[in-house]
Structures are given as C-alpha cells and as structure tokens.
Length: 317
Image (cartoon, helix red, strand yellow):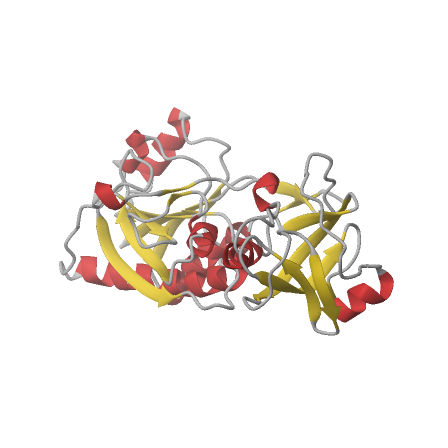
C-alpha cells in the first residue's frame, strides 16, 4: 500500500513513526514550512519533517495546496491512500480524490463530538468523561466525513491538554495502523456521522484562558487543565498576570468570587461562583512555575486579597 502522509506536529509524527515501523511504503510526506520559534525566533523544522528526513522520505513543504503543480506531483505518486494528521492546511476537494482510496484523517475526538481546531481542550472544558480517536474518510466538510474506526479512552481528573494529547497521539498511531489493516482485509464499513450530535471546537486564543472567578470551581479547574500548556489559564492580581498551571477543587469553602480565602504551604484557596479552588502551581509574568509555598515566599498575597476581574490591561508572560 502506497501512502502519502500529511502532518506537522508531534501528534502527527507519532502516527508517521508507527507507519514506518509497520513497513508501509511512504511515497511522500507533506508538512508545513519551517516556522520561527523560541526566544531567538530561529527557523525550526516540524516534528514530521525531522522524522521524514531521519528516514530519508521524500518531503514537500508547500505553503498552500491550491497550486496545480502540487496536484500534479501528488498524482505522480500513484498513492493508494493519503493519511492526514494535524496537518494545518485545508485539502482542496480535488486533492481528496487523488489517492485510490481517498484521504483518511486521524482526528482527536469521538466524532461527531468536537469537530474543529481544538478537540482535546474542548473535551476537558466541557467536563467530558471520555474522548478518543476517530479515523475518518475525509470529504469537503470540516470533519464531517464517514467514520471508519473509533478508539475510546477515559479523561481522568488529573488530565491536562498535554497529558491527553500524549495519550491520544499514541492511540491515533495505533488506530491508523489498525484501520489500514482492516481496509486491506475489506473488513471496514464506513458509518455516517449523526449531524444532530455534532458540536464545534473553535480555535483557542489567549483571551479565552482568562479565569472568570464567578464560574463554578469545577469550570475553573477544567479551564486550568484544558489550557495547560497553551495558552495557560491566567488571572490578574493588582494588574499583574498570574498563570495557574495546577489546582484542585475545594467544594467545602465559599466566598466572594476571586477572593483569597486562605493560604498555606499546599496552595492558595480562591473563592469561585460555587465552591473554591486551591491554586497549587503558579507563575507570575516573566517568572518560573512555582509551588504555592515557593510562590508566596517571593510574592505577597494574603487572605482577603482579591484577584482582578478586568482583563483589559493584561500582559502575557
């Protein structure tokens, strides 16, 4: 089976590594152009590019897939299937028809729940008890194609977007290998998605991560986990940005939303609209992530103090 693989970050590279390990014939790898990253803003190759180069795979990095020349190159690969995982570019309908068996997407949710850009974060924010991987036959819509295979995992109370991403990366790699095996054995039956169950996971921006202390303690905790590591849930204290990386729910305490109820070596307990949360791992703008006791040793906070509710003047650290 000849495969074109399209992907960019670690999530995709994990799947590509599994296909290489299974000795599939990868005739071409597509990944996004190198991007500037880090403090020095040096150009950095994607995780998929690094893996492709390490395995001497043919590689293309187009900035768009609308160019007829790219279409001609893809046609020339005579691929059986194209596998897409977190690629970051929209596939024109003309490309979807190029491989003999079409294009398969490794999607990090249990479709039709959480179509779109941020399915992992959205599942945590919504308090979902489970998520998973859907291998989907791509069509012209946004994650709307028929489902070929699903794998489910629980979302634990400790999961962050990062830990769930890592679990789903491994699950996605296994799922695409299983799906290809079943396809070759003619043992896979496409299942249409139920449109009545569809919901959309919109792209996340920094303002989404501002903590509204009037929300329930459960929701605030979901935010902290969902936005770890990017963009990082944050609040303001006397105008200064404070990012919260870890907390736990303290339902037995209540008070004015945003008010610090008490502090101890284990955390800073803050009242929410319903219940409270204990902030355990904290970071001030420009500083390092610290435990509560480390944070309080260098930053003055006292019971009765309140976190700001206006995020208009926020500066991100």
